[in-house]
Amino acid sequence: MRSFNEIAGKNDGDYAYNAARVPLRLADSDKPEVKKTLDKMLMFFEKQPVIYGGYTLKGKPLVKNQSNSFSAPILYATKGDKNFSNLYASQRWIFNYAIVGKDYYGDTLKVLVLLKLY
Image (cartoon, rainbow, N blue to C red; front, side):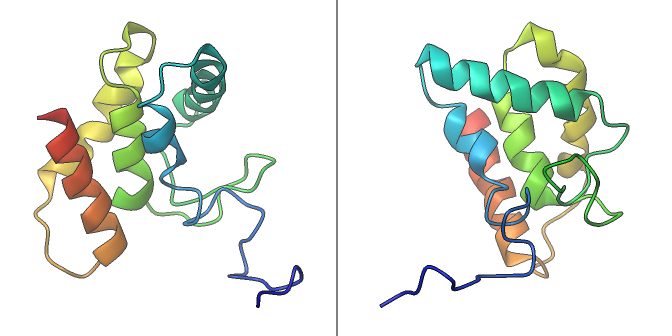
């Protein structure tokens, strides 16, 4: 039985690995309230010069590196949305690098997005 005080990781409560796939999941909904939430997330990411691998809920990067785990779901969430075409273009970097097997979670999200897009 899980305790309510149990912590999965030091970044619980942040936009970290447990939340990275949220844009991917929201993008498949046709509900207006979900689209509104997704658009709010994407507006935040559109303002970032680089999408880093996690953020605090106040918008500060948790790390200073990019990650397939975060960029692939954002790429998918911007598909076909003219309002976020620049964000879509900026996240296409994930296709420039081969899958080398060192990032199971990121590689999995990258492949999933590739399959869903094409």
